[in-house]
Amino acid sequence: MTVKRALDVVGAMLGLVLLSPFIAAAAAAVWLSMGRPVLFRQTRPGLGERPFTMVKFRTMANDRDASGRLLSDAERLTRTGRWLRSTSIDELPELWNVLMGEMSLVGPRPLLTSYLGRYSVEQARRHDVKPGITGWAQINGRNSISWEEKFALDVWYVDHQSTWLDAKILFATVLQVIRRRGINSADSATMPEFTGTRGVE
Image 1 (spheres, rainbow, N blue to C red):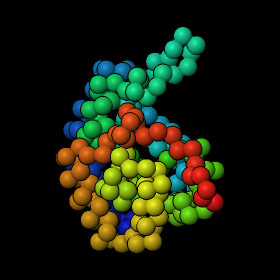
Image 2: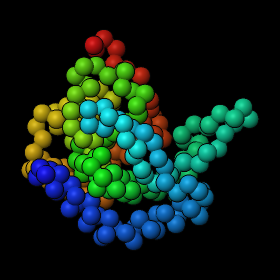
Image 3: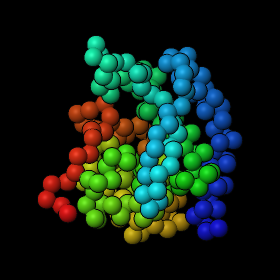
Image 4: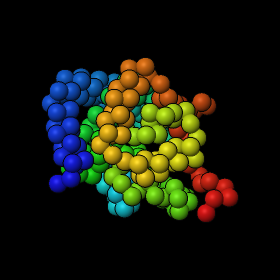
């Protein structure tokens, strides 16, 4: 077991125990405001682009228009969901993914599988490490920066990862959560879809 994996296991176990009151309260809030399911599950690419099922608290309702199509993220994001996102409590169930070895405490955020064919060769290097609950991009802009900036930060982390850097990122994440910075993009309730980077192969 590597040092990083050992720290992930210890950190995830401590997090699940110490944060259990917040996890229970969040689960109750989701159930009361949106009903079931309480958890949102989705397949995401992990290390080496291998798929895994990421879990987090549900923040959106399943409201649809007259044609049966899901409404926009902004329209489906509930008041409870906004609160969960602004406090990052919606991410706490991912500690289970860390414990299972599918994610790390620190690493590039796991994104949609549909993005895999849209990355440049350089951007795809973000999958050379396990995805994380938080990462270098999350403490340097999170959703307030462009996809290209975010991916550049992810690749920088891949090339410079260390125990010291992980500790720095975790500490900075706590401060950022308290200040609630970078939750949304400048013109969207959530990060807009990544459609690819023009002119980059």
